[in-house]
Length: 420
Ligand SMILES: Cc1cc2nc3c(=O)[nH]c(=O)nc-3n(C[C@H](O)[C@H](O)[C@H](O)COP(=O)(O)OP(=O)(O)OC[C@H]3O[C@@H](n4cnc5c(N)ncnc54)[C@H](O)[C@@H]3O)c2cc1C
Figure 1 (cartoon, rainbow, N blue to C red):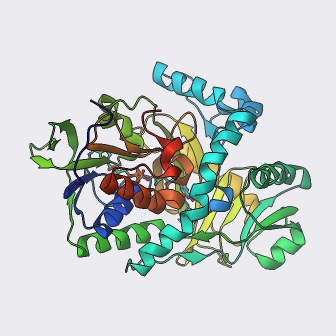
Figure 2: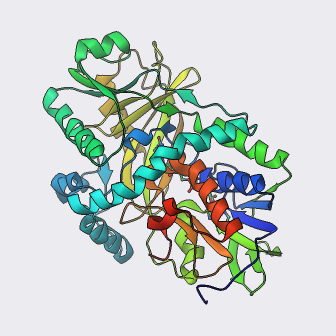
Figure 3: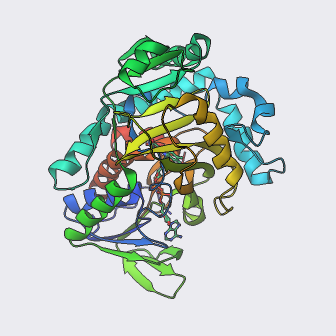
């Protein structure tokens, strides 16, 4: 496919995938006057965009591969109760991913990837505000407190070091260093076992399921059809149009298409030159009642457990399980999160769990998303955000819509070129 082939701005675009990234792209395309059809093989927020922690935290949005992963070591990865899990019999594709991931877990690679994130992080809230100003009814909440809590000061030093690196890289983040007692005064839901904490400022959160349905409603209200049960099995650039074929035999033509299929991005994108592996980094969540609902997210970094107040319950999320997105929910992981959180939360009934869920973070070995034109001028990729697709989904949609309609790659997207 010739790289410089000029194509007119598309009038009708098919967005495949109704997660945060797909729906935000659809909305910002509509903002630019483009007609959109969204197709999802299940429905709105059927993938990772439902049961995640809902943090909008550009202040700590950093590349996943980092030197601590290497220090953490393979031994920890192989234990079923470890917060990061790799099956003992990894297939060759997963081994390739892990080898490349380890190669990217160096200080200098982290710094380079961080430099790519910073311009995105700077504009992340602006894109959310544009959605709100444009009539999207879903709410975003200021995190009145955002508490990272630890048993000991020694455990806390890991995040303090990381915050130092984040600031040195040019990312703005304000925080206070608190004792356990000071943290409990702000957040009475923390148990006595918490002996040290860091309070982050200036971050937000959403109720992801609610947010996604509000966004879907706004996209529909602007005239899009969201086709559910549409399993896209083939995307064919015929020169002048793209054919999108579904498993049930629908076969329609569009001027362009956006592949926003989350952890499954590679399936349709590979034939258009996208070689970066997108691997499922599976996470689990559930929600529980709690006496004092925290005023914002609570994070237990040593246990890798993320908690978020959603309505009148607390969502508790965690685990990074590198295995097939299709594998069933493993109840041992739910138990591991429950037991990790139990000593650290006060007044939470961790045995009254509902909404037990597993979903796949779309992870790339270099920790960078894939956003932009593929080898075809009519096929665009949008995904691979790993841990940060909720924080960066709206801005991804805004910048990609600009690229699709103008033919010019916004500077922020250069490091995320899907053909890298
Ligand atoms: C436990 C957990 C906690 C997290 N916490 C946060 C957080 O606090 N903040 C944050 O920013 N991020 C967080 N994330 C990451 C975030 O959830 C993801 O990065 C984001 O949801 C990815 O969105 P997406 O639209 O790319 O993919 P998805 O939401 O997975 O959507 C992809 C969609 O594509 C559809 N699809 C796939 N293949 C096809 C096909 N062939 N045809 C039709 N449809 C198809 C799927 O059905 C799905 O609906 C978390 C993730 C997990 C698992």
